[in-house]
Length: 119
Image 1: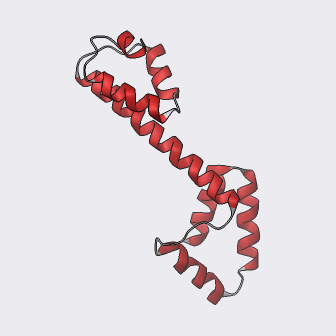
Image 2 (image 1 turned 45 degrees about the vertical axis):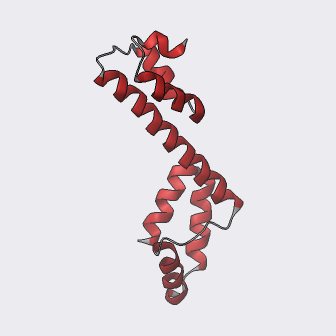
């Protein structure tokens, strides 16, 4: 289970993480030490210690939040029957500015066209 987590972590962030995961696993040949670390990871209370992990986890969370907001904008527009051209869809999906996306979610409720969203 822990090995799977490390592999997913490695692929999700970058090649260096894969190397770090390998170093950790190599260092934890002792089953008791590995079990202890796995228990800390599974209980949901573990806080990342390294600045490397904190940075990439925060970036991943921000990207996920932005994707969710973009999906909300598109869902509101589509539910209201407002056509969303490919260019506008790409602009919405490509936006990483959470405050802008939150404004678009609110505007999507009242605009008559996607062009009004960007005015």
